[in-house]
Image 1 (cartoon, helix red, strand yellow):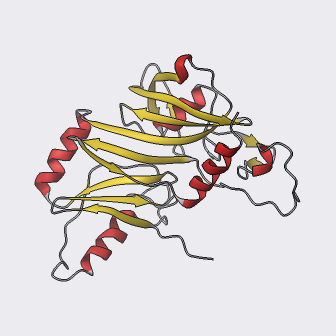
Image 2 (cartoon, rainbow, N blue to C red; image 1 turned 180 degrees about the horizontal axis):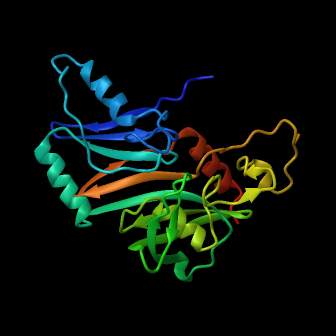
Length: 252
């Protein structure tokens, strides 16, 4: 079995690096999981291997969850880092995520949005909670793409950048992301084990004992960032692409 790459560089110029990271890789150090592989260190080590680049600088512009796959931007100099940080802070950056969720939303025109006051709980699970007194405003728009069985695929457009924002919003809407260990559905034996073809394909004929999940990690992918009319896009990872392909065949 081929080893999954922790990241792939999808764009690099003199000032910006755009990376497509795998699920399970932290963008920077996490006090909640100090042993998690760090994207910033892995990327800097790779850059240092290039000729005349052993002192390469790298600046973190924004973060996505460790368990979320997809697009992360880094700056290669302090000036670009400052410019990008201001753009993110002033919401001049359009972000698009793809999420696989439980349920079949019936939203008007296939669209909805969620606004909540969120705050990190500070507990060992690193949860974000809804708190109308201490929370900060958050806003995410959603578009339903299609459904298969009791699962659906949606695009998410976060307007703010609160920790776990999309995950909390979808859970609050009663459509949690699949395989979400914090905000998702849980079986009697703990976290759900994955999304199986047999769970949404009609007349599936196979051996349940031998069936493997199409996806067994958080079903959330940072797909696209639009910045100053420039678009960076991270292709879906193999597991999520395979799931969406099968769901499209069974959509109804």
